[in-house]
Length: 319
Ligand SMILES: NC(=O)c1ccc[n+]([C@@H]2O[C@H](COP(=O)([O-])OP(=O)(O)OC[C@H]3O[C@@H](n4cnc5c(N)ncnc54)[C@H](OP(=O)(O)O)[C@@H]3O)[C@@H](O)[C@H]2O)c1
Image (cartoon, rainbow, N blue to C red; front, side, top):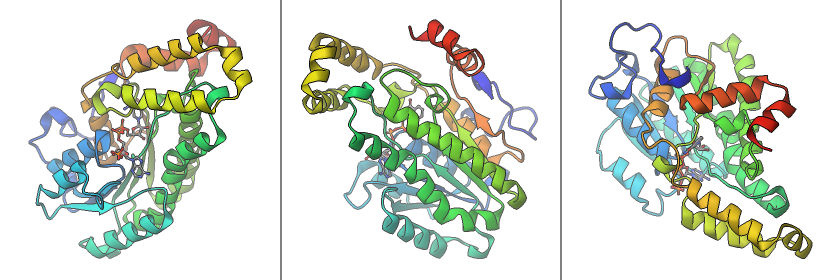
């Protein structure tokens, strides 16, 4: 699944899972329903539209439906009976339970279960360990990791009934670490561990559990913005102890902030690699266990970091 040069298993010729074949509905999507979290914008929003165009019935969980968010409204405006927009903040059991009830009521054949769940909702974060509060570690994990687990546990009975799919949005930072990204990395490493354990448990139920590990698409989705980075940095600087501020120095802190803001404009701008992999994970008869939508350079680095002795990989890429 590397480099985006994948086939849709079981298909020949034009790959019907690919986003460049948008106008072609997938025969295997007919009658299948998928819940996606985090559909207000970014990958989730694009995937909701993409799967709908492919013929799936989509339950689009949105953080801001109740507040009249633009993304939720645009999905409602499609006016399709195969597009159901739900209020869903993955941090709250009560919203997850309400979403479950809503899906059960709207499924055409509830007894056949729900085909797919895509745990996409997530936030990004940055900061040296010594500038990152325990509260921030918890806040990031509450969405990226516990949110994934919370929603999965609620929907698993429906997914098992359909012998369907759980697709977890991880990241290349769920497989390899990076300075300044510890709060994000631990949440995504947790998602990877959860995905692997669940996959092993689900073999006997015929449910496929898949991790999708994109590289950097920040410029495309806006998960990190210069304004957001600036605000987070100010909060971190003010919250750090005097010792940490003095030892690291403001110049070092501002330099990292400058590089991080530059990072917010980097990465791939076309999300079709990610959409193709998510679609294949849901539609292929035998999906891969992991998908790595990324450029060749990131893929090589991922292989190096996960296979080389750690000290050698650090020497190559960090120190
Ligand atoms: N973009 C990348 O480079 C990249 C790379 C690897 C992995 N990923 C992963 O891909 C997923 C989607 O990221 P993205 O880049 O599309 O980001 P995005 O554009 O910020 O979209 C994330 C979505 O999740 C929503 N969300 C945030 N907190 C939530 C909560 N508590 N409950 C429900 N929804 C919530 C956001 O709502 P708001 O619109 O209100 O913020 C937003 O709609 C994330 O899990 C991310 O970690 C992204």
